[in-house]
Length: 92
Image (tube, rainbow, N blue to C red; front, side, top):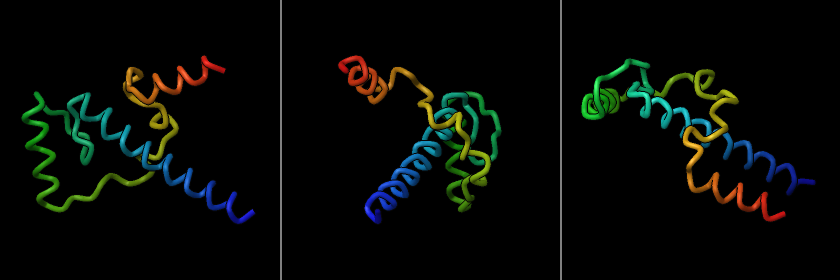
């Protein structure tokens, strides 16, 4: 039972990581700062804007913002992991 509980906790931790990464990826794809949600014109401006937040030690948004079920699914359905999962599911 202890191993099952540990595996469950570890899987939750992984899902939180996935949600955070997908939240960041979606915002960057939409040219929006994931720290403050400011829309930037162009990738270079977004990069500078994010670097400013990082140099001022800004914290990531509150967990309630990115810990949403919509971020469990990869922003880009063409991602290699999605293809592997789909291939695995089709195999069985």
